[in-house]
Length: 37
Image (tube, rainbow, N blue to C red; front, side, top):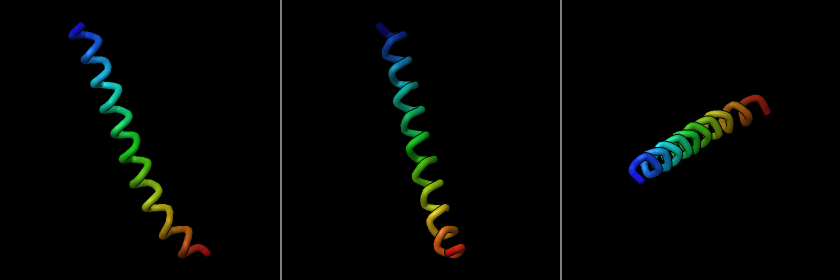
């Protein structure tokens, strides 16, 4: 079961990193959109 737990932990880390990257991307795009608008 340790392999399953490790794979789940990796998926959680990947999803967490993707969420952080998405938030950072959205936070960067908002000022750019306001400046362009």
